[in-house]
Image (cartoon, rainbow, N blue to C red; front, side):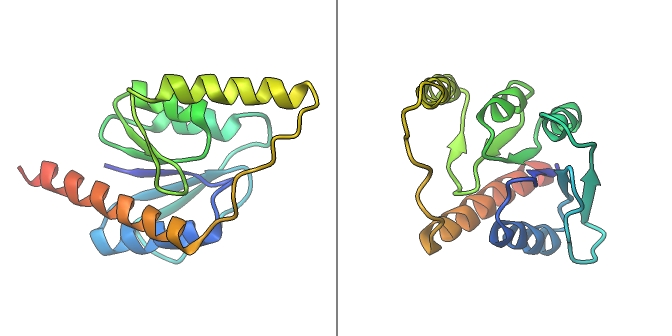
Length: 153
C-alpha cells in the first residue's frame, strides 16, 4: 500500500496533508516529478525525480503503481491507467476517480481540449479553497482507514 503523488502539479498544501497523513499512519508516500520535491525527513516519504519530458513522470507512476495503491493526480488519463491496474485514484480536491466515471471524464477532457484548440476560452478550474483542502484531507483519511482495515484482516 503506497500513496503515489503526481507531484509536478500538486499544490503545496496538498503535499503537506499527504506528508502528515503518511507519517501518522506509517504509509509510504512517493512524490514523482521532473524536479526535486521538498519533503520533510521521514522514512515514509520519498521523492523520485524523472527526466524532463512529456508524460515522463506519468509513465514512471504507471509503471510502479500497483493494485491497492493510491494515486493523487489531476491527470485523468493517468488516473484511468492506474484504475485499470486495480489502484485507487483521486484528484487534488479529493474527488474520486472510479471505473464507473473515468470514461465520461476522459470524454469531457478530450472535448474541452478540442474546444481550447479551436480557440474557445473555457477558463480554468475554480481557485483552490479551504473546503477543497478539507475534502481532500477527509477523502485521504477515508482511503487510509479502509486500506489499513483490509491489511489487518
